Image (tube, rainbow, N blue to C red; front, side, top):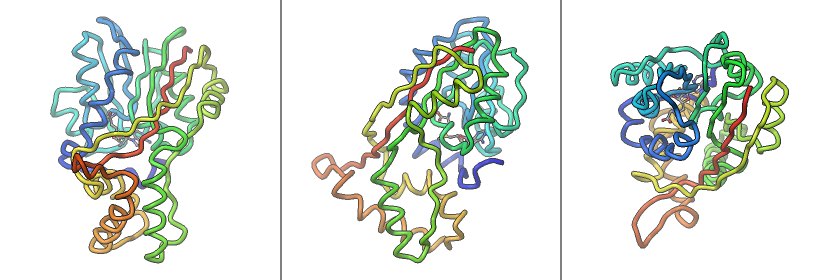
Length: 252
Ligand SMILES: C[S@@+](CC[C@H](N)C(=O)[O-])C[C@H]1O[C@@H](n2cnc3c(N)ncnc32)[C@H](O)[C@@H]1O
């Protein structure tokens, strides 16, 4: 079942989430897509990176659980399909599986890893980056403290942020080899305020905990206030998020 906290608005994502794809240049280079290849983009979102892969001359197929973001991807000319990664059935036809900033939304990694393995040709490659152990620790701590203050004491953050060893273990189990996984801490400049980030990336979390819309705004403002010492740059008047990415390559 898809993560109920994964809820997206395409316009909002284009404004406040574009930096996610903009930071994809390293794994795009690691993917090194070639003309004639067939590539699966897992959690393609609104298709910004999927379109770049297609521009390399490879054929690319995006899958994503969000109808809103898949509609935006299709609008930009990307071949994308609404389907949860756990439910997709690949049949060994892909040269590579690619994923940016998506695998941490899939709470049970085993069925997703199995799907990625089954989708690849023998010798095919996996190139992925997503939230790793320690990701947005300050933001999660602040949001959880404010949720607690408002009576949502058992609020579950609903993300999967594994260590390299944990994720390598998952990939080993489903038959991947040559697994390389490492954490990349990346303090990330945000295009707007922390409240803008929370509205884009944690609206589904607040909705899933039945927080009324007016109270959501209060919770986001209080969370932003708590994070000023950790993540606001007074000199530059700008906000950062304390991202830690897990960068993974493997062969099947
Ligand atoms: C932060 S966005 C990243 C989108 C895109 N890859 C990018 O780089 O901009 C995370 C994406 O994961 C998708 N997602 C979350 N859970 C999913 C699942 N179970 N199956 C497929 N996609 C999922 C969301 O719908 C969302 O589009």
